[in-house]
Image 1 (cartoon, rainbow, N blue to C red):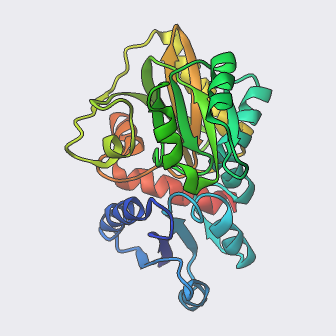
Image 2 (tube, one colour):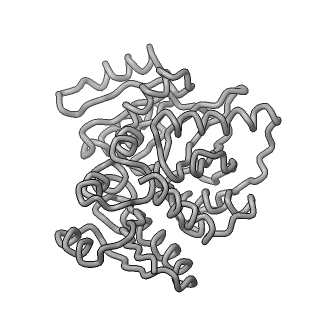
Image 3 (cartoon, rainbow, N blue to C red):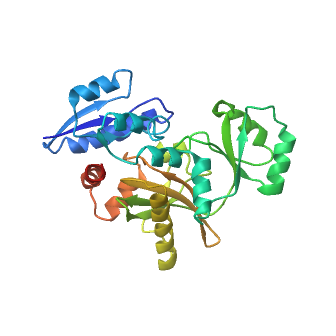
Length: 306
């Protein structure tokens, strides 16, 4: 019997989503009696429970900091346990929006212009606005450097910039990024292969936390996506290139803006959600890959690569 320890919950702002993901995954895996499952959170007794259960592998369903930033991966590495999704370095690079953008730029992947801003020092709001006017122009996107699920992301114009900036002081460092209008397109990679793409039309300003996880958000999911064959292949290829550059494993999802016939890579997610509203399972369904098949692909990838 295959013993699988499922890690979910955690300490990040995405704890609730992680638990919902785990609930969906456990429900599917329980249908197959070949799995013996244990669902736990990474608390103070985590390693003790891990050693006692002695799983064949860990299905990592944590989101955000401590879960997809290399932290929990380093613990699992030290315990010599196989685990799903990306490794220590890949996870830490992908979740750091500044470092990953530098890597994308170095590898000729188009990404919005930006600069890093630190709250450590006293700052002059007028000077920041001058820098935006010179380098980016309004509107801009304010986002924490290492959060997921669009936590703490604000599209800001000149009028509300100061107000939104103050909301993010708890993060210490953020990115101020040029806002790219246009279509929101997401591309999924599974086991170093192109899984497919989906387009989103949120009723909100952009595909933020509420748009992602609220059933009432009424975000329109469009699949198949209305793109030329050339652009369809292009966005899939960029997603695969980013996945490989960061040396990701298992599944990843890259978020794009498509504007004036160009794809701008916003970020790459090494542990995309697997809830009923999540995009990767939806893309997989369109490709005739069931939810349980998708989960088992991720599990098998961990077995092969570790």
